Length: 552
Image (cartoon, rainbow, N blue to C red; front, side):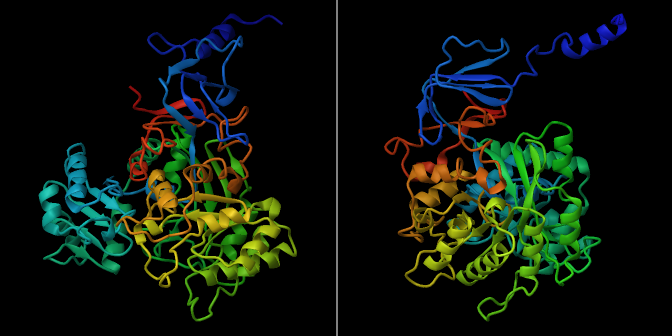
């Protein structure tokens, strides 16, 4: 058949870049040379170079006589340390990605003046009249003053923009913010700028309602840029509580807080970035359901109308969690969710991965007992079920979960929260070392997005030292080595969403995700334990694409 000239020209136009464009802009081929590349493969090899082709690791070690695409980017590392892209097996990145206004992450601040300076710097770059916000991922304990900032301090730092400074509970605003909220009927303490209880929730809900989709996309772009600068390339997102004013909730439990949103629209900005091919961090979605009756209407509709593990390499629906039913009951008094086993049996029947939040030994034990019941009907080992947070666990429960193939997803939220509620003389948890030494599958994450820190190096610091944000040793005896902590944040985490063969280590055929570190994490003399908190990525690569660079 004759090939029409017009068709030939049309095809040519799709492959030849326009004048002035980078002829290799399409390439996902990268070769890193002269580095200390920690593969975290089963042999724990350290190599000097690695080559990524078409977004996946192709050659580990010297290239030799192999030929590569002429569009391959060659980067001389000059001896820098490289690790696989970090994976957070449980956070709330989607919640973080839709924060209203121009958000400031104050999680690395150690005093109120430092936090105020961060707000002031942010305010210099935002449009006139725009909100400057700092929502979640901090507590007053983070600051040397051990208190919230005041209205006067916010006014001094940001006099020309309204400010909303909120934690999991109360919030503070400045004079411009107070004027706005009071005009909307929201009560603000005139002396302190405090919004408490329903007022704080109402204020945040109002700010969310003011957002356009474009606002949320901008927020999501800022959120992914933030995590990529630390080398965090994959987030397993565990959803949001349903805000009380959300539609179509049927019998679902609702909760007003900074951890809440409309569950049907909260993903819009992430979907938009994915559709526009601008999603630079991998996101794995776990869907919360909190039906209050045995009918389980919302969970049932999820399971019947969504395919498990459906999506692409950047965005995928990976599981149900971190709740399948309402969970906030009087555990100390022996209460528990009556429809829990029914919900879990349904999740297993439909072949979904599941992860369950726990904040006490009784919650861990109750979860484990129900996992065993489900396993008697539908084996869960192949589904990669896990228990999250795990502040404490007893040996029989740990061994019973190991026997049926359940994993443990451990999170360092105690770094911010301290050891409140922990029995005197006991470690605050999680019991990292105990669980790791048991041989059960274990990985790490943050639970960040509202109550913990997204910066993975702070989480790793807590795992290694057992010290909280005040410097107090609260998890004595449960520390792990630097090598163990990093492996739990990389190679061990793909398992939690069925991607252990694609993510977590630098091995031939796996997705080409890596981070070039600012300093040598493995050098205990060059990087002290306290120095771990200062680590960041100077070059982050996701699927062969350079998504963050500060490499000089």
